[in-house]
Image (cartoon, rainbow over all chains, first blue to last red; front, side):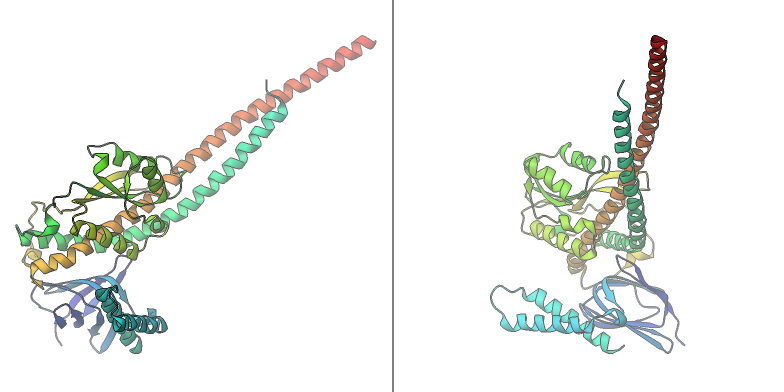
Length: 134
Length: 283
């Protein structure tokens, strides 16, 4: 069994997660990455997506929307602005948000904020994906 | 000497005021506990955030990034965090004093009020007002801080303002709150280059892009922290003020009781004297 590392996930409001883990996967601005213990020190920026924590046989999922991650060989700290467990996600609302964002992107009328709409779309997709994993 | 009825009336009015101040004290005690809990919970986040930013900036060295140097605008954006209610002792006025009585030139400031007490005062004093975020202070959530920080960063990027400050009441403990002026941008790099393992951090994407992305988060977290501390301070200040008011009411009530008893006694004495005098006159 591979070596474990300490995974801490903090948000401005609470300590979201603080346990040992084998592997953690998430989406960054440079693409998806999976991190094991002993990784080179690195700081990456999060993109909305699914966060997967592997602890032995157990796998936990969460929707991670914004923040950044500090990777040290034995310790990984995720500073998440927004993160949710599947149980906390309102799927209906996420679906509605997805449709709204898609609608706005489809129109492409001069004044819409494309970046914002895209970010909203990515967030809602991440939420829906995670909610399905319940 | 005031009549018995007058004294009685005053006493009961003080008593009902005391009931109100007592209730307000209880309410703010509960709110303070909650705000304190929130402030403590968010501490980890800010500490991590601070460490990362410091290590990032010390690594970045003399990088020429817009967030790290003042632009040409003489204007200063000041986010003023006050309460939206009074009866909190000097809580609101201390903040207002801190903004008003210093080396800043009134015409250079743009006030972004958070809390309607600050908003009303600075509007009345004729300051230039930016966006109003007063609704956020009642129940500060992280999204509020995000809105505020993206607004001020926009103004900074477009050159509308050259510096960004936040003025709030720092919460040290229940009895000590310090009105604080904090400079958000441009960030000053402190010379505490740490030599621990965190100094070797690498960034992905490149450091400059990372600054672009992380600094706004850092600013947001500072604003959020300031709001949370301000809420805790406000409730602590109100709790103290109401505690004093309740104690004062106690004092007034006891001195009024003394006066009332004295007046009652002298009224009885006088009545007796009159009766006796009347009886003597008849016999």
